Amino acid sequence: MNIRRLLVGSLALTLVVFTVIVGKPLAPSWATFEDSPKHVVDEVWQVINHDYVDTGYNKHDWLETRREFLARSYATPEEAYGAVREMLKELNDPYTRFLAPKEYAALQVETAGELSGVGLTVDIDKKTKELMVLSPVADTPAYRAKLQPQDIIQAIDGVPTKGVGVEESISRIRGKVGTKVVLTVRRNENTFEIPLIREVIPIRTVRSSIKKTQGKTIGYVALSQFTSNSAQEMREAIQGLIDKKVDGFVLDLRYNPGGVLGASTDIASIFLDKEVVVSTANRDGIVDEIRATGTRLTTKPVVILVNKGSASASEILSGALQDNNRAVLVGTTTFGKGLVQAVRQLSDQSGLTVTIAHYKTPAGKDIHKKGIKPDYFVDIPKKVLQTLTPADLATTKDPQYVKAASVLIQRIAQAKSVS
Image (tube, helix red, strand yellow):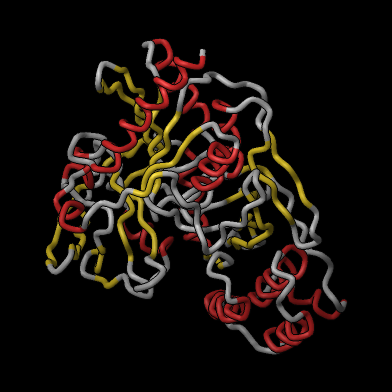
């Protein structure tokens, strides 16, 4: 069985069934290497040639690339993998990348609903190329050790992380339950070691709670990433808050790196009726409009918290609710990733993430490398951010949440005056 997942973020976790279409070799003579390391090189070339969205790359040069790389000899799979990575550099697309079998398997593990690790969401900082903490998962070893967003993990068990792919780093952080991993962490100017004992980490993406502010009952919901389970988790959380008679919602998408495209549209359907959620365009310019499903749960006011760590699926959801006048955004400008990737499983159980589409918000905005501007710009001063702990989020110590709650109360009052 071959596998695919639609991605709009580097840390999307969920896979869905897919049949890989790689096209036919350009010449029958290449069929002789079907079981050799060279075959993977050609598979990757075929996927890019067939599906890659950026038609600005030079087709003639890409044909020459195939001839060049298939003329080489590869004694081992590792040599072929190195060649694939070299070949993909020609695209100058950080989101189209090769996954060795262990890296690809690590992604599949995350679809099982739980994994063994320390409870960290990480990514590579696009400027420094260092491994950066996006957020710790609540009630996990990383959370209890008070790791913070934007901490830099310099080494894992003494082995430097700089220049190492995010999937490989994640694989090294994971391990058997009960074993120890030591992270070397840099926070601002300080560097220190944090020993952690691995545990079974349930993959839950939604946290919700009740907040009382100025006599109003606010339903606070934080979404850490978009997986195939996130929409159901979100629907259950929103329904639970509705049952508790909340007056409105604050949806926290800060440091949410994205995930499965379908999850973002399904979550938008909780708040929208049948409006457009997002439009995508493939390499042939064919535009597909994705609409909400008509299964809306609530019309109560919504405020969304965003920052520069809110990417991809977070931006799709934020843009959908903002453009349809269903929510306002509070925080800072989002990351700016307007591309959709798919993951292709290759014949030797390695994988390839490939950019297959561009997307725009319902109002037709292309947010790639621009991000989405919030309706209310609220930054957290560096000095305040340095002292914030995960437990301080969505409290009076969190300036962005304080503003979001204030805006929501205003919108609740406006909604009541209209009704």
